[in-house]
Image (cartoon, rainbow, N blue to C red):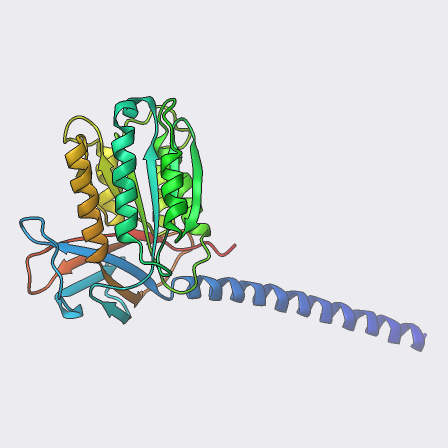
Length: 308
């Protein structure tokens, strides 16, 4: 009987230990999830530009010239501020290759090649090329080899309808997968008339993908008029980019020159947000000018990563 009692007590003790271990494991997993969330949003990286009333880029401003609100609260701290940041660039050029640009393709290729040659710093910056019709295709992955990029641009041919929103989602995946070490600036140069007629992805879903990948989108609007679609305007505005008119050859060249100037005039700030973070929450960013009247172009917010 004593042996039986000892066995029962032993089994009970093991059960208690197993339950305690399971509880500790669950608590630890929960704690790790929470730590992961905190670490992933412990620092928000934000690039932005400032222009004056005539559209000229303003440089030489300092951290004191800006006020930041993250989810309506000032940051807990600002870790880093740079004017004319030299952080490496990761640029994705996405070219609309649908039937509507048949007579425009050759000039578009030449201007895009010239843009890449001027903007990429050897050994520092990289670019990739996507063409899209009814579906997006990665023509050239990220590289700093300008000869490969030039060859890839020249391989673009015209065919089919247009899936702009699918191209945005695809580009976001490509840029997000880039394994660049350290902090980089991510930009998408989207050359399109904005007339989407083939996408499976909704615009709002495409915009969310771009925001999650922390990409600045610069749009070259190749439509015949200077009035872009509302979605295109919202895309640029929410990501800290601009819409540039490119309906004529000279306009396209000017647009890419402006984008080049914009990328060379960026400010960079890294800060730690304050307040509670809910997984999946969209946190709105607001920036206000101090001591100047410049217009600030910046990303409108970010999503707090989920714990899984």
